[in-house]
Length: 276
Image 1 (cartoon, helix red, strand yellow):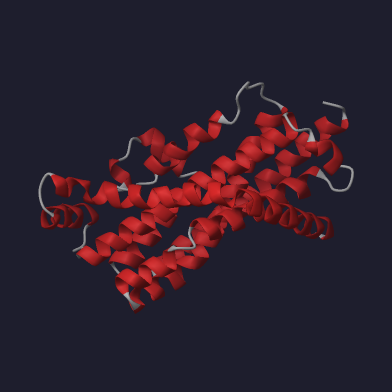
Image 2 (tube, helix red, strand yellow; image 1 turned 180 degrees about the horizontal axis):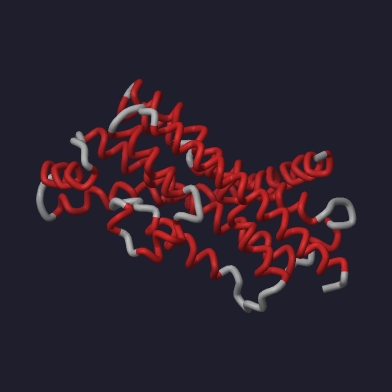
């Protein structure tokens, strides 16, 4: 535990330096999904009317949706897009690049074991990326929904944080075997495939039962479907007891990925020790 704490502190310092250097790139990546989220919901109004869009949206989601709720919902969906894209893509690329391209692990593993290091990277990068990629969400929800938006975000904040860390560990559990055991010439393309598959399979814009089974199966290995459901309940229906169930599922996935990453890191660490 002490090694993990030291690794988290060291990685947090390094990430702060990286964020300061590349903040403009991250901001662009976080802002664009806002327009995408709103565009997907309201683009049909260019062929009809806003009222018809709201009527159809109410039918699909199973509850009456007002214009302000639809705007808040679209903005919130954009936050999930940013969250998944930033964390899954960044953690996979960082882990694989450090192991196979930059050779950073050789110097890092002198001071800390592989499991502590990759877990620290997953946690720190996920918390930072999750926070900054959704930092506009409470402001936007309050602007659109008033105090109801603030209350919704207050209950959504914990699932967002837990989902961010779970996604980071999920990405690490995929990146480790790819970095040490699988010979893929361009491993960063994994994130290019995984991110849209997760978002499509999670029922981001349509109910999950309407999504193809293979995409649903991919998404269900992540907390994203539960996060989407929590968002749908809090924005469109208000607080209910099912939020506790959703939070429990997300925390269960988080615990499962901690165990998976630990086991995977031990296997990869043995290969490193053998000079592999």
